[in-house]
Image (tube, rainbow, N blue to C red):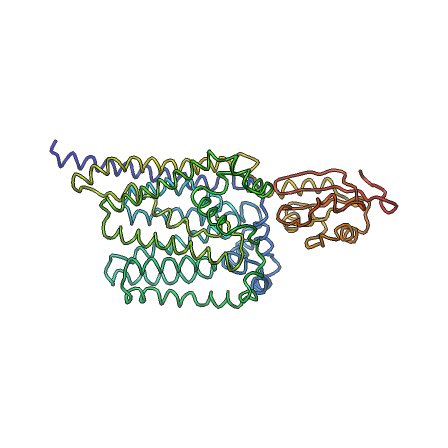
Length: 533
């Protein structure tokens, strides 16, 4: 067999393996995003989605979004869509989570197409190695929250922008319109997406260095974003961002900035459970998990080093250099803008808030393996033989870390989110006419969703006069059940809840569920009677 024929046969084999791997990974992506979809209870934030999309009426829902100070006002598109979805398909757990599943699958496909455009079939396969088991992508694809949709829109916006480079003006015309429209829609989907759009614009300018081309591309995109910007700036909190009803920053911005990188790469269930971090103060718990966190840090740093080496010593094409520059600058600039946004708003920055970071990461992860290109002189080929296998091993290691994170998420109760289902069942059995239940913190609509319909809404009760407030809410009942969701972030008093209720009430029992503490108290003194103890 001639040398040329041998090379052709080898190339066909490589393509067949890449095709088989791509089909297998895309199938796994679909299966994983449907797996155990209805198993976990709807949690705190998902209860907020149900509350925001109350079926009282479309006009009522829009008015609520327009007039609230809640952070959901700044990501309205998802809630408009979810309200319509609920009218058509109902309120079951599978139904309300299904839109995120579909957006999550669509995001995987779009990112695969973008990686294929940038790196070819083999590079796209390496991107899928990270994307398919990504704990961040998978967890948000299985919850009734906006983030799967936002990741999809950011992915589509990015891939459309990359498609505008290296082609003739005629072939770009249709894609330019699509890019402008998607940028406008993404802006209306979330104010945070605008930070990423600014990062993409910066990356496009740095990579292209042609003001005229850049203005023709980005001025229409900016105009398409104006309606969303007007809507956001019309909020009552636009002049005082710190007044927005969001969970406030409780520590340093640096801590949250590091947490965002960690969560983007391996999800929030890789290291210590968040609930344990909140309860312990953090440092001692982090030290308990130092082996896993050290492995993560080594893999992350090694991947960055491998990528830099591949760019400097490899043979990427001009288009690949241009587009990796766009992505790298977009990643850096949008990350810095998120730091500034956190400083201004005092938002408790979680990895989900910087959802857009996963998009350039997913498209850049094949770089350490693929930027060596084909051919080259002996020096390049020798460097590729040294670095490419190590880089491939690092990508496999990153995927393994995400699988480890998912094992925690699915199988370890310590990583479970708020279990409203179990809490509602217990409340229904523990409370009754002579022992009313009072919700002090949480989403009452979600307890009602799971059947605890007689719970008294005590959210917002004065913590400094808690016994008097409980007595007023329950009509001086002789026995009460107090329900507290996310106590560590709500209770601000120096003493425990049991101590704060004393001497008017005596603690009978405490039952805990993930993110729930449920207390049963008997009234003391002449007014009490201790019913039901």
